[in-house]
Length: 306
Ligand code: C5P
Image (cartoon, rainbow, N blue to C red; front, side, top):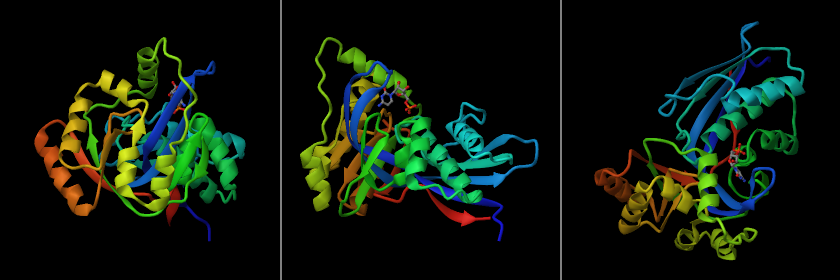
């Protein structure tokens, strides 16, 4: 049976640890990071478009307003790269149903690009291996390979070289959202500015974090959360310090700016604590929204064929 389209569900991510090394001559920083995919998803529908329509993107979902639909959208670039590389003679229609915050440090744009790669692979029966797909993903952006793999993984290099981590347990998160995003390059620049004159060593994975994940010990994971970009995100958005204080005061096991921010992720013990913290953060007036999620979850995968 010929498939007319597919829907790919792709998770957002939190960086449990993000170690940032010095700026390389290529304009990127060497990072060592631990990603966790969480249950906050974008659904990416990929269909064969009407002849002559090119790559056409439409949007829906709570975080869709303001997202571009032209070739500045990473999903557009993902479709372009697949069309060129695999001689796909069809036009492509993409619908992004967005729930992951935009410019929130949760890899929302990367998720959409990953969804397009996996969707085009399935729609045209290309049979690409995970390796090939992750290599194309890395050309699109540092976080795109992890959006494909999901689960919990270590990212090295620019964050694009992924190694899965075996872990136990399920983690409950409360996400404090900001009204306005932060630009990833701006946060990295601020990080360089704050560290000017200091000697920066190569980032390492924390043994304590690895042991805590293997043991499924959420209290220890909470204590091990760390992010070298957090001072930079807080410097650009001082209100984030207040958000972190409120979450920790109300009993979170740990709190962290996710990636380049400005989303702040709080780890809590269970669903009940997650509800309590949601109420406290909402009442505090220092956040634009609060979402609960659990992790780890799967990476980009086809959930429907049309
Ligand atoms: O790879 P991606 O396009 O997502 O990166 C966006 C920007 O973030 C880069 O242009 C760079 O300024 C910064 N970045 C970095 N080091 C990394 C990843 C991203 O400096 N490892």
